[in-house]
Image: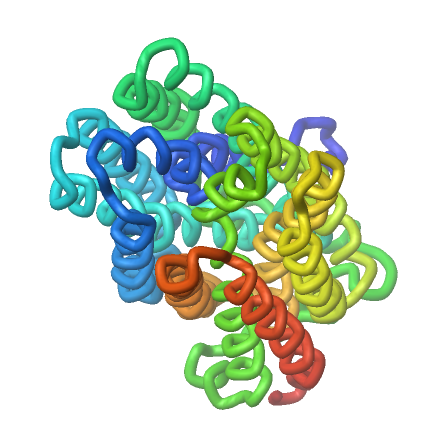
Length: 415
């Protein structure tokens, strides 16, 4: 993982900065917002559907922005995108700390979610994909480890700040973390791709590459975007990711309210968020390493099936052991999918238009992120329970696995 001159390959510094902004970007996560649901709803009298609507609106608008941002990352690199997105999140969190009405909450959290889904997620994943080939899985795992580790730290910290001070102070704290851990390192370290600095990919000179698959030219054709969209695999993967994202996101916002309804204490319910994040941190590193040895398609298919299993566990969970079992499984799924999906795109279509491809992919996922929480909220408000919603989401996850399994990698000769 080091070039022959002994220096650390600069791509790892880029991946470190991307991991840092993913850490700070936990501020935008539904798993963090769920900690705010009860205190903000109690103060303002908002329903679950009203709160979920803000996450859905921001997700849908972010989906519209993602393909455009992906193209910009291909042309100019991710630094400006990540810094701008981080600043928007920080300002949005500060505004949320001063929210007095539902309209203000919608405006601020919608903008925050747009920056999250339409900018930060695109920039962080794509920049890691462009700097690595042989170690792409590990680099992507490192980046997404930051996001999961952010959840590990932020969920209990937010709960602690809310308990010791109030929910407004917790939003201010999240803004400060984004500025210090996310924005500043990205401004200083992120660059577009190794060729811009005269470096070989992975920091290994082409003459030093040995063995099958040693270089991109051996295993990875660089597709033009117009070629990509003509392959059946592109649309099958896109559809599978949309359905799976709808299924997995339908839980996050409602997790703490559901568990407290099942009889767990708020502290235990928030603890499940931390367990999920801890599992996700390990999953990011594990999934990244595994995807370098096993076809990413099969890793992703397995994760979708595991998502369905986790939803079945959650529907029945009314003890701490069952709750934490769900949290472990869901952490594996959420972080694993985020890590492996961009690896799969790169392995199918190369690095040249990875930003544009991942932007379109992220748009499909983000629309799913918007549909899932809102659908679960509507079913809850109508029935008073989440059981029906979780069953529907589990069926969707199994369907996504079946679709993805049919997506064949385009041939090197022309797809």
